[in-house]
Length: 488
Image (cartoon, rainbow, N blue to C red; front, side):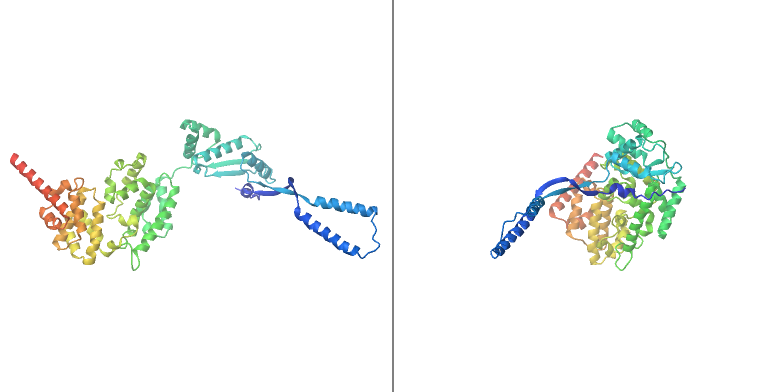
């Protein structure tokens, strides 16, 4: 296909601003500067002339006509010079109207000598659907009016409008209040023909994504799992695949940097970078489902919790988003990790970094694996014990609405501390006592804890008021137990 170069920079022509002076318009002003200068010159002339005249004895009046006429002409020119016209500067802005554009289009392009019956001009209009509702409809109406004028009677121009027809329909419905059928009729009359770009075949999209991942040069991305996660999310919008891979790459490189070096911010090495598929899944959730991601952060949900959490009762109004999210989770169910915290922050706290096997210890607390908890707490030195206290309090706060997990954490932690004869600060024990006295938390689950564990580890270390309330709760439990025995 031969391209026709008209040698025109039409974009600059349309955007230029012209400034010129109009000498026919303006105001008349008296120039005091000229008057004072000339007046001073004449006064000086006569003053010097007077001095000379004193020494000239035969000075006679001048009556020569030429001299008189010269003086009159001088005076007229002098007076006229005292006035001047101040011109006005006129600024003509760039072409904003359809009529102005039409005039320039006809004069600059359609009459160009290189256009002929066999050589046509292709005018491409892109990104129309990305404008705001009012602007998109305004532009569409302007284009329609422009085409309706039939300024190109010899059909030398072809207009190609690249757009998302669904987005254009939404623009029309929003501005004009049209029904979907009316919007379709509007578009049918506007376009002579249309060509819908075919969707990717699933296999083609997977292959395309894998090829883009290979181009990054990251070995961990050369995986069908990573490509599968991405295509599961962007199957309906393949144009976003490349952009998302760029996002994935930047986060991966940052995580890689933080996993290495003398003072790594993520341990163990590979916690994030060896799970590239889950990193992709996590970033997709944050990017494509921001409201759901906020709920995940607020509730400290683990990967397993996310699968089971009831997002419909979490205050999210967008049911269609929840449906798509569930579909994405179902498609990527096998892509998971035990600890999502490093993926949230791409770093770990100073306290977490001070305990090499902290992830294993946290999982043992949550799963109530007493043996592992005892072994891990035994390894802690005094400084690590202080870090452990901050970590376990944070773990308790993140799971305070999950009664079973909360009970596991507190029970296994107290058993591990008792076994190794290690204690934490009063703040820790006051926190536990408060939860045991709260019916919304563990107040109704007191019987699940070994009484000796609560009495030996908590009661004599917490504040007196909480201690008294917990004792009263145990008295009530014993009373109810005796009443049940009596009934039986």
